Figure 1 (cartoon, rainbow, N blue to C red):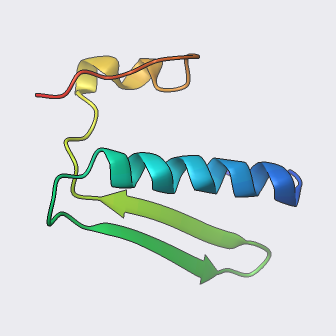
Figure 2 (figure 1 turned 90 degrees about the vertical axis):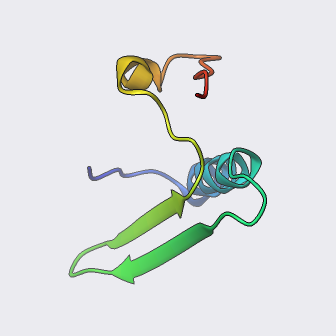
Length: 71
């Protein structure tokens, strides 16, 4: 997905992604942030070893105030 936006919004989005990854990853889990340059842009990935979001709830991820229930 390509997104054109300003630096302040990108900072807030990345902060939320990393904060949630840390918050929902159990002790001794792993949070990884990867930034890769590409031809005309960059790719940013935030990965964690947390519970994840159940398949049935994934379509609600971008709904305001949505919280997935973990297993």
